[in-house]
Length: 205
View 1 (cartoon, rainbow, N blue to C red):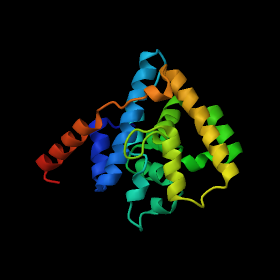
View 2: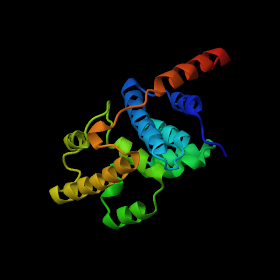
View 3: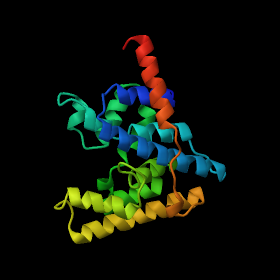
């Protein structure tokens, strides 16, 4: 069981023929997560950077699956985990399954996750809350979700979810030794996707 490298992760993503908007989001999350993982490692904390980058790039793959794929009927995140497990990468499952913001709505479930989640899971989940089509403050990301899903949560639920996300932000940024406004992107996904496309052309796929 091996964690896919950058090019292999890019190949997996491209195999699902993602549209441009999807690719921009996947790249944004992957590069924010990669930057945070690099900073955490530099600060002396053990973290699997390879796993973080691959899981972050592939976190939303269940949104690309055809209607007849069995993973498509699972809750978002769980579907990505199931598809990746089926394709030989169960080591990515926990980090992709835990990323959706909806996981923060159930207080008890959040407390269990916060108590036992790995550093890798936390980084991927946080990166998704900082990157839409580009890196942005978490408050802007939440505002975007609320515009797209105006009937999703009550005002009290929205406040509780945002507060839990703030705790996640504080934890990840403390581990990285940075303030939230100092978070950046590590530009790795472009070269990985280029290499994956070159390999596909060479192999005739």
